[in-house]
Amino acid sequence: MKISDLSKLNFETVCVHGTGKFDRQAKAVNFPIYQTSTFAFDDSLEAAEAFLEKRKSYIYSRWGNPTVEYLEDVISLLEGGEKALITSSGMPALSVLVFSFLNSGENIVSQKTLYGGTYSFFTKFLPKLNIDVKFVSGESLEEFETKIDSRTRLIFIETPANPTLKIIDIEGVSKIAKKHEIILAVDNTFATPYLQNPLKFGADVVLHSATKYIGGHGDVVAGILVGSANFIDKAKKEILRTLGGTIDPFAAFLLIRGLKTLAVRIEKHCKNAKKIANFLSNHDKVKKVYYPGLSSHPGHEIAKKQMKDFGGMISFELKGGRKTGEILLDSLKVMTLAVSLGETGSLITHPASSTHYQYSAEDLEDVGMSEEMIRLSVGIENVNDLIEDLSQAFNKL
Image: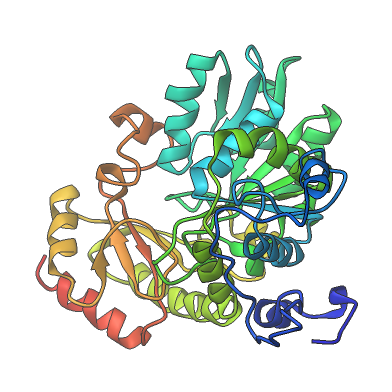
């Protein structure tokens, strides 16, 4: 690719062509996998200067790897950030984020409706380090401001939230963060860079579980942070190298491959999800549907403002309680009963007993996550087959 100004390219083109960088000697169309743990030096001077960072040289794949760095460059382009950092899963990305900005005795303000692993990290692990997390419902912007004090260093939000699809006003929270000179980080996993770019609405850092839509095929586990060059460079050098949660080159290659179809996959996920959300909303055995694309969703207008489309995630509650939901899950033939989300095939699960088992019964009620809730990651299959699968399962209730 010969275009030098990548900012002139549209999202879909960057997904396919990346940065345009390739091996000019071999002329490989795809960026190669540097499947190596360590790198050789031409002489001892180069080695010494590499460790002192006086010269750009690869040393060890925990410190840096060409395949991983190529992926980071593409991701930062797609999210509109200066730099990106790739980790071995979403949880190391979260750890690097927190440990980059907080010390013992300081605190985070966060909404309470979160991915279960994030909630467990906030409520069980960080208190051991004397780092407190103060939760808000996320129903109003004022809640965030009332929780901020002189020790608050980070506001963390997840929108759309897992699994209630709660929508948080990124721009509104960013104004509060800037007022108090606090970092705002946004988990953008459900939306992906194709549907939502939090940095454009004032966020400082974007986090992804790249395991989900970025990879898109259910065959790789990874995490992403995107932000300023200063933050990413410091996070890599001072935190990631020490914690060691780096991704391997082959996993990075799988993510590069996944990105090539991200735009077309997300469009299909969204198209299917809209039809299924409408089907569920009109079904007499469904009590409630959670999907930001429905005008009945409380966050619909905010979602319209900050998202290109409404995503491929739906949660819903059945009439008849948890037992009815178990019958439904056990009766499906096309959809797969499994955790995770964002891959080509439709995945369905019961959050209270799986992805969010860390929440107590009281916590579930507090965040509006009922025992009956079912979460559906809508795939890219023919939507008529998915609706037929749900219909035959409903007939067994």
